[in-house]
Length: 376
Ligand code: IPM
Ligand code: MN
Image 1 (cartoon, protein in one colour):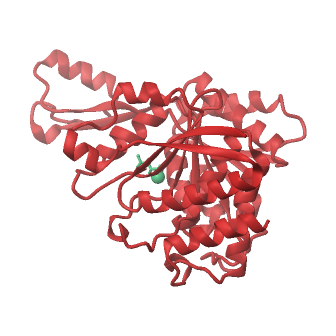
Image 2 (image 1 turned 120 degrees about the vertical axis):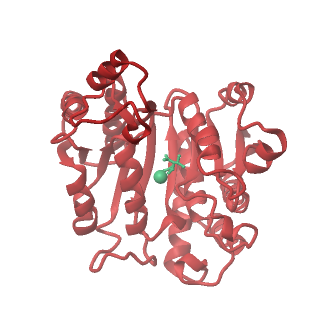
């Protein structure tokens, strides 16, 4: 029997509860399809950090890099300053593994309510391909206070293109800046992924999103590369859209979209909007993908500390992320079983967690989906 070793980082808050259900469903699929999953648990998260001072070590990252896929719950804890765990573990991981695609399917399943009036499952079914390593996430920036000399001052003025008179000699004149970086290679690989994804999943259109009308340097290149890559894919139509208009169309005409490629920051923001129109963060999965390396799968939602240990969180986002994980392992029909089971349970509507307007628990939802997998 085929066996797959999968490192798991349950993490903080509701992370361990939703991961428990995710494992349950994937194990059920394994039973039905004849493969074995060997979970390898890693403790990273708030407790580990608070007791050891370690976020995630270089050694662990090196070790994790040997695997094709990693399953992650959620990170973030009220005892730790915001950002420490998110940046120190989650972003660290994505960057270390060079997971340049953040795949976020936006799909409204039957039986789930969308806040969009007059829109249904036929209208809301697209994939956000968020670039995951560049743009405003590169961490280049600074806060510049009180320049020491005229020379430094002039240098700062020139470098930062200050357009107004700022007194950099005093704290009142402090300047903070953070810049975005896009590389031709970085844009090319994410566009290629998006077009290949479209090709392999029967999608006929790829839309590139940007703000090329204002951030002209970065996004003119972004557009150029998009058009170049598109030439290699006949039969797939293309479109380019500004991010502000896209946010409007996600609400007004979601049926226009099939595969939508976004730079990192815009993708971060609009994929939350996407999660809302598909019925909430409780059912929105994500994959951080390096097609040639280690990929990590997680729900888009955070650790929701107020629901921790209450067995009320919706595990569907994590379960669907598990489906994406199986697909990455090359088990596409098994991945489809995960989605099929989720779809069936949502459609029947008997088991619903509180985010879906019901009273079922996290484990009841996991049980129902796992049971359904065995019946498919
Ligand atoms: C996400 C999150 C992360 C991001 C944070 C927690 C670093 O918002 O996965 O969308 O900005 O990418
Ligand atoms: Mn986000």
